[in-house]
Image 1 (cartoon, chains in turn brown, green):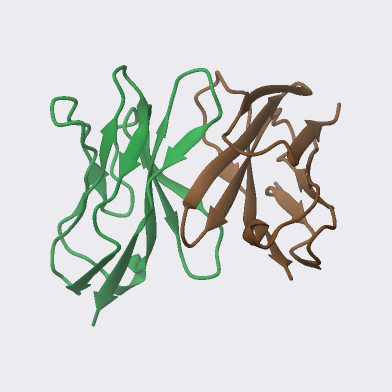
Image 2 (cartoon, chains in turn red, orange):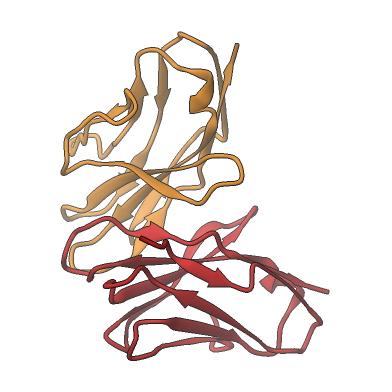
Length: 114
Length: 109
């Protein structure tokens, strides 16, 4: 079956702009979580969504937001981009938060802010 | 607060040598512990989880609650084991992971 798909794979934006990243989970998976990966901070949790509801949010400013649609696809948005937002953004999908099954990661979206 | 520590950024061993990647965590309850691996140009993927108590690609990891550790071990390293390894902690009822900073394993021929 198809894996977790993230689009676009690469993105270059200018400071002050906003950006929307997309994540399509594995078919049947209803839980999606997002992570920011940087060389300095490593992998940091951004949000978790299940059944269109945000269940958890990491310690990121309000410029970072997300949502999940009825088909479980998820988007994250970053407004007023800063240079420090340059990172690899990963999403992970699983059947549900309580299923204790494996979480599968996408290949990520590489965001560069100039 | 939950925290996962991987003290080694880089670990270099020769092929056939034993390898141990260290992971310590801080959490007062009973978390789930995982090892994820990222091979060059590939996505992050699950290697093993403590509740499975299985060996994957010759790797094993034992949860030591007394020492709050979940070290990854393999008796004989192979060149194809070269990758980035992340230890992660998850709390029940959440699809949310706390990751360590990762250890790059380099297996030399």
